[in-house]
Length: 261
Length: 219
Image (tube, rainbow over all chains, first blue to last red; front, top):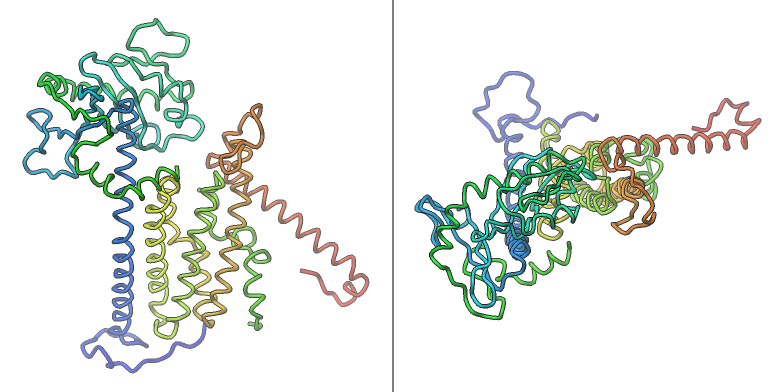
């Protein structure tokens, strides 16, 4: 390495009393990094300002697509907040609309409720499995299941979303679900075939659904008993949640995200 | 150090001093995210972008960065570009961003990038630094693509998600799992070493007897 350029001490930092052989004033070193850090921060903020709305739109679009999928394409849906007093159209005091726990109630063309979409997450084989499922509280049965996020082993655990036999196996199953090995079915209405070689992953999926039904089932039943009605509208006018509004506000970005899949 | 021509600066990193296959740098992403071709391409592009941006800035700012804090300053510059790449990927291709996960953030500690700043961009003019970055970035992409193609074909029977080996092919799951990365890298390095040996041998034979007389070995 070439010789270090010597900078006059005291040039920028008169109070530097650190002993040793300083070749560059510490103040200059600090100033260099501080300026570089400030510029880096500015650059990141600018890019973030541009990217964040699109990232949020992708997230909302993904959730919206998942809700529509697990409720078998409802005509519209509504976001409900989980509060200590049951499901409510307004979040509980002290929580905001973005972070509050939500379920989604879908309606058919006539405005009749078809079922609730519920999200849940628990540790699987590698990392948390995030999923969403549709639940018909009248019949205590599932409408569909979709894995939102997982890092399960490729080729084995990832069958929880790649193996369509397993995914569609959740449609119409009664809760609480029992996982059975292939070939050991008894024909009961609450059985789902487990995936060979992915026992832990498939057991986790079943566990998440059972736990969520257990936790939210009474609230959903109570809410369904109040007779919620959707809009009678053949157009797919979507409910009034903040997340859905965001998705609808940027249709081009959302469409781009879906096209990219 | 011998002076190099601009052409050499560009070409060197692509093949003769390929960062992954010859220098064995940047192996972490090369092992981790080459399980499919799209992942390999996305990681290659992101790394290319970070390398170009960092080399440009480091070369521009080389006279203002005191050498005591140069490594911190380089890391800061690299980390900024990595964060930008991370945000752009999340905004533009969310699915690939999800696949690559933490490995985008880990571009910061890719020693190939820091190595080019310390060894080249911090001492050369801007144009040369960009050429060097482009060559090294391209070399990295070639290595990533080689590994990605090899692993996706054997591990999934497909290229870019399009099946190429037909219905009857039973995928070698191990190739898209972490051990497959090590196996693939091993095989590619073996082939590369064998090929280089043969090249050297060919040159030696051609030079005989002069090469032997002067004690010169083709390296």
